[in-house]
Image 1: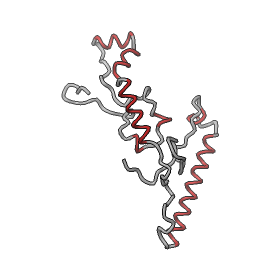
Image 2 (image 1 turned 30 degrees about the vertical axis):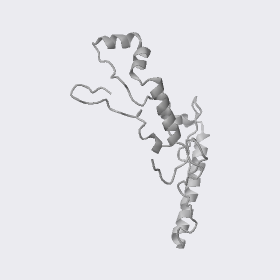
Image 3 (image 1 turned 135 degrees about the vertical axis):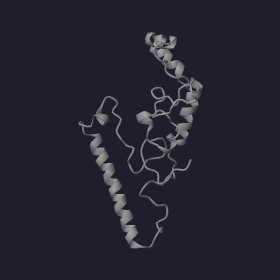
Image 4 (image 1 turned 90 degrees about the vertical axis):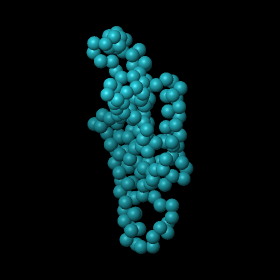
Length: 167
């Protein structure tokens, strides 16, 4: 990536997907790489230069010159998809793989209450997903919000909060 005058590199923003594997549910919302490319090969032209005039004449062509080539985009999508899948043995928030993690009744009861609260949150999210007043859940795309569901099925689901993330 070319540096700006003075040695600065282009800033990476919301389209930056380097940390995407740690945020397993973003694909349906912002992970569509055509709309949000992972990086840009060129800066947008500044007013007064020849490239800016081309941008005014043909913005699609100039945009396509700035994003990464198809092969690099395909590799990026493939890596994100593999790293963002839930394994069949994933433990989610509020779950333990050892029922004997403590014999102390107080933390066991608190853990049980926490699990119930997580279930209540999922129910509330499902209720909000069906409410027409929430435009982001009932707009043209009809993508229900599932990111804070406490658990998930195996695969690329856009839901579930893993107990830990190791990449």
